[in-house]
Image: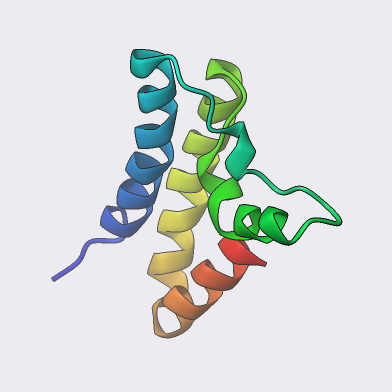
Length: 90
């Protein structure tokens, strides 16, 4: 059985992985962001939720994702996965 914080926690963990990779390996993953008027920029629609500019940016996204994601899972479980995907990707 999945608790109401496990799915949002996994998503937050997925947000932190690229950020830590950037820090540890000194790489810039910004080229995976959204770039308008370029076909290659469409990949950013999928990857931009996982890219963050600095520590304050990722912290500012992590806590609300945990709280609001948990509340959404708890109160709207039947439509959680569909709505979560749409919120992240659209």
